[in-house]
Image (cartoon, rainbow, N blue to C red; front, side):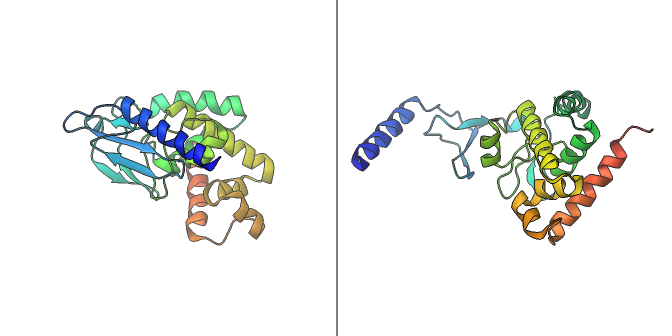
Length: 204
């Protein structure tokens, strides 16, 4: 059986090599493997590589624990506002809260990639995105997955601050400490999201 599996993997790899895209000079490609590792190349040999169009992005910049290309100029915060409002309403969350998480996670940078491999506006880890059944590189699916996950955490913990802490540090950490873990990054994260939330909420 093991030999058969190895033969199948070899056959599959050969078929991928045959169908792999051809790179043009100066182009960069990337793909994310099953472990969440991001691979870059200018000579792709695997059909999973997708072309990164560098001319569509500005200079790299730093965000909350991430380093990535700036937001494509074709996307504006107002574009995100419409998507956020629709998605938040669908999952029963305040749009201002979802917007606050996005501001903290990626500063509205749809192409953000953290040092740990989290992706997109709501910084979904590849395994979380897989669990949610979304493509984290698609803006609409990223926001839907992140919003749905935040809704689940709030329902699970029954407390917004614990839900935010779990979004950042993982629900196991919140369970272990019975609340916000004593991690400076997570504590700062919760404070920042709540500050944005207050700022984005419409006046009463």
